[in-house]
Length: 160
Ligand SMILES: [Mg+2]
Figure (cartoon, rainbow, N blue to C red):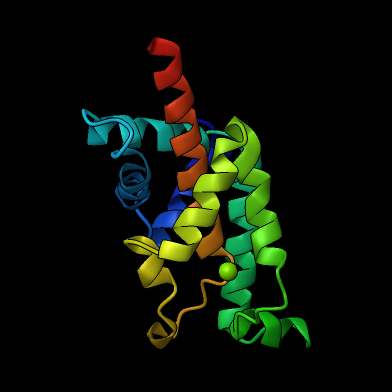
C-alpha cells in the first residue's frame, strides 16, 4: 500500500468512517442483485476503489474543507456554505462525481439512489446535531460505495 493510500485511510478513520461502514453500503446496494453476496466481497471492492489516486485526492480535498469549516477557518462566503451544507453550493456533489464514474455508469445510478436513501453511515454523516461538518465527506463516502458497487456488478457480469 502506498503512502498516500495510508494517509487517506487514516483520514477516513479519524472522521469516523470505517471500510466496513462503506462495505455495508455496497451490500445495501448490491445484495438484491446478488443473493449470495458476501460481506468480504464488498470490503474487497471498497479497498480497490480507495487504492485509486483520484479517490484519495477527493478524500484529501473534501475532508480538509470539512475540517476547516468545522473550525470556522474558511473565508466567507465559503465558510457559511460548507458549515451550513448550503443546498445551492453543490461543489461537494461535483467533487464526489469524479469518483462515481471510475467503474462505469452504473455507479451514477447507485450514487443517486444511495444519496436519497441515506442508509447506515450516511445517516450518521448527515446528522447535523453532532457538531461535526461532513458536507463533503457524506457525498464522497456515497460515491466510493457507488463506485465499489459498480465494480462488483461488472465483475459479477463477467463471471456469469
Ligand atoms: Mg454534501
